[in-house]
Amino acid sequence: MPSYIYPNDLRSGMIIEMDGELYEVMEAQHFKIAKTSAYVRAKLKNFLTGRVIDVKLNPDERIVSPYVERKKAQYLYSSGDEYVFMDLETYEQIPLRTEQLGDKAKYLKEGLEVDMVYVDEKPITIELPLVLEYKVEYTEPGVKGDRVATAMKPAKLENGMEIMVPLFIEIGDVIQVDTRTGEYVGRA
Image 1: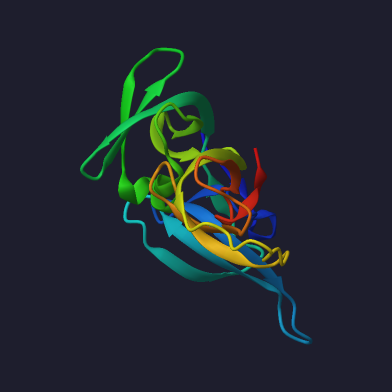
Image 2: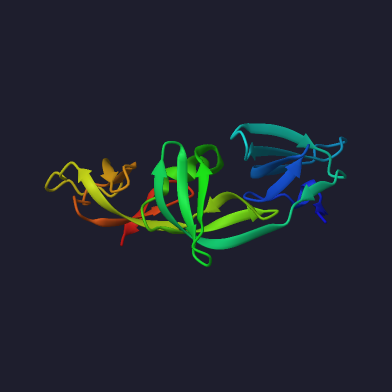
């Protein structure tokens, strides 16, 4: 039996059901303009198609909040547009499509442990840790004496992702990356 929530309860990362389809709330803003009724504007990402829609919701509307369960899983490999994970309790292999993962796919590396998100006992996406560690595969050497704190240079990481890092980072360094923003956090 599904539970219901109101638009004022929407938060980024929540999973909701509208018109029979599952959506992830990317962003929700509450508006109250003088002498007009309040409303909530939300950006929702469809789990099936990956399409992002912008909706305006009346605060009195009821929204279906499906039963969501999270289980530990480990990333194994990718094949075409499928990414294969292993449930760490049952050792069952679970494939997810690129559309289901979205931008999260670029953070994956072999052996990475994630939370697999299930809705009605079906796997729909993953949740990444907030900070992940990667080895720097390639970056230009820093110029000696150039130690400006805000100066950045591109670096290619072990999983193929490219990010901007400070000038003092060298090939072989292990760095931390924020999975929400894709930005350098610090050395590991």
